[in-house]
Image 1: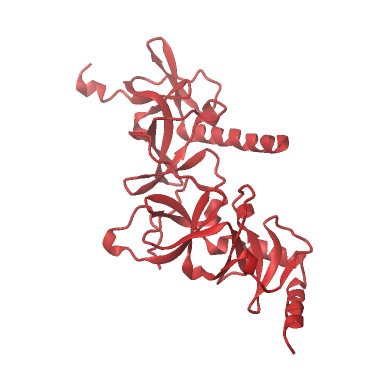
Image 2 (image 1 turned 60 degrees about the vertical axis):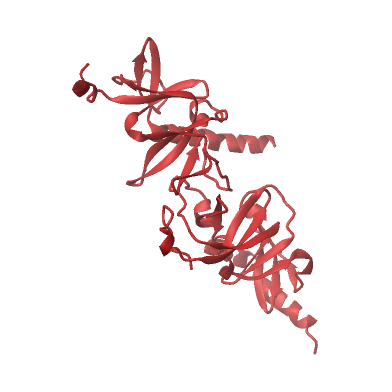
Length: 179
Length: 156
């Protein structure tokens, strides 16, 4: 785990490292902790059951997907970050949230040595989107908060407006299982 | 004026945002730097164009153009690093400025401007320079930018 958030670079000796994945959406690059990712799949080989939401109450979520008996809301990364439409080719299936994020591509796996707090001047949705900022190859990149892709309130809205959807997906999966 | 007396006279940093010449109290200006590399990433806070890395610290870059000019300010070669007061703490931000900066001593006079972010003015060689209230200038810019976004969306 990386050192707790601080406003400046940590002294070299105190730095702990965190394995991360660098992904891109549109022209931007983002970092996410590798520990928060369950699986990285190509959109072409995602497999599993994909169910379209009857009522897409959030623009960024239109489907759920089943993977290994677990269900994930598919979050469009470009909609989440209010970016223009892009061509997602990769899905990040998260570990501790029922979320699968569509991103353009994985750029690299790397090590994060420092996590800087987001300056207080930032006061919008980015405070939920990011854990902070990091410096990688002399570039400042935002570190995505895996729990920020869908807030508790957004999850609740999705479940309230699509009751029984997870059961439908479960039934679909059972039908596909060999007897 | 003796050195002792001159230290009692408030000083101001005079600079350009676009074509508009304005001033800030010297107390809130930390330094003037050459244009740093500005890193941008998605966010929703008005006026912030990105962040710069300065001495190991993240410094947000704030464009005062939307508040002062009604539009984004032109590309800048220099940035003024200023100290903001936010929630009982302070934070350094970089403001892109055009042309040269000047340190002047003078007495700030009551504002003649209707703009709420003008704290007063300096009378310099028959030129009146508005002295900014930094936080109000940022708030005014944020208001202008937030109003401009729905209008742009309506036109698109």
